[in-house]
Image 1 (tube, helix red, strand yellow):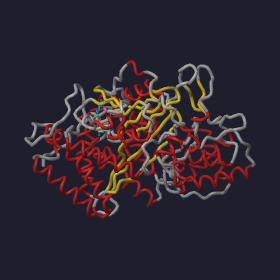
Image 2 (cartoon, rainbow, N blue to C red):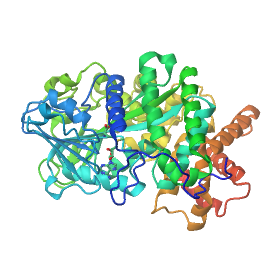
Image 3 (cartoon, rainbow, N blue to C red):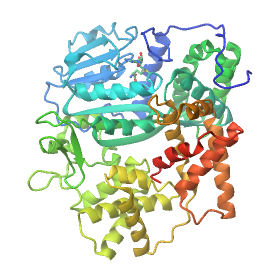
Image 4 (cartoon, rainbow, N blue to C red):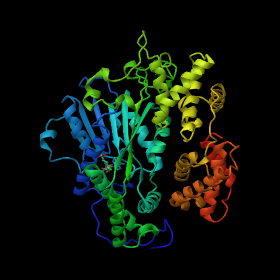
Length: 562
Ligand SMILES: C[S@@+](CC[C@H](N)C(=O)[O-])C[C@H]1O[C@@H](n2cnc3c(N)ncnc32)[C@H](O)[C@@H]1O
């Protein structure tokens, strides 16, 4: 095996497959018949784990004059499935840089006349599509888009959506099994770094969406089991993910094996070992995320809207118009668990709109609304399991403190979620909670302390390692971002370390473990300790000090609101 990760040398000879050749594309998967079969298998898998839902966004009932877009459509399998659930007058569009997977031979469906496929990049959608679509679907572009392209694609989606339209994105989350998988992840990081792609794009998407003007985010995460131990679903899951990784052979070997593999046989053997590990490792899994948002455009003037927590509605920052109450939902993903795709599309009452007497949503006034507010914040932070504990804390604090509804209740709700997360030994995520509630950190922190003393809760001193995954994702995006605020010298030092991040994180966790056992830093707040440990671990991997470490410390601590 060659010596250093990210080392790009002479291409390694191998048997290659057919890949797209769109100018400027960095997409690393093939476009051929086996890939069509894989995409179709993957569609069935994802539909199964997400309860047979094709449409996640709570669309109102379909009138028939809508248009849906599948962005980066591949074999068009999602559109072909949706076709059977919408009236023939609904127009369905698919766009992709490569046409060879389009379902040209599916005459029976295509002859219905309401489905159109076109070749083009989702970084530059047709100008005439502005304000056209009620729903944009985009699934699994993780292996295609660079950091800057993600932002462009999101703003293009925003442009082509109608006001009050919805976008739903499905992206790959983390995967886990055993040591071979951990080793393969390093190769994957190396390939993605080499191509400028973002393996953890799911972490960044909510921030980019919000920046682009989208509101009312919903997130769901499900896992596909990998390997024979999980029966047919596990076998299908393994076949899908292994085919993805095998499909990356050409870009990896064309880059000389990236310092991690030195021949085609070694690459193939690596993948065989990976498959074997999954078959033998109960609990091996790959997570997938579905994230959906409402377009933040005003239905009256087309300008950007902002989410108003008190009204539980979007409100236009330009003309002050409130959003359509039928589409304004404060919803936990639990609300959608039992609804089939058909229900979601056809039955307008399957949504969970909270309406007051005047027809506007009145979140924060009733028990149901309160539950939803807590659950929404908790599930947006991907810890839906903490929501009921947060609810109990919230109810007790409201009773005992005799707090009034309004901002005090909002801060108490945020604090309750943070306390429940901390009790579950997860990151209290105060910074993220403040962001989601559109509040500053300081009042949320004060509410956190006052609820703890009001209810006399004895919180165990927190473990700094709970912040590591947030820091890891943030560091990765800082280094990938071409507009990064870090100095060129610092970036040059950090870039080669990105492929070693799993090792860096292990070192940081071991350090946190040592400290918590010796109780050395338990009296200090955890966010700065986590940043310091991360810096130490990076320096350990570098085997020297980081130049201008204080700038990096500043950047990391901003992520945790220090
Ligand atoms: C992993 S496939 C997913 C296909 C489909 N969304 C699905 O879930 O079945 C990614 C697709 O994105 C397409 N793609 C990559 N970069 C693109 C771009 N810039 N514009 C349009 N399509 C792109 C690829 O050609 C490929 O068909």
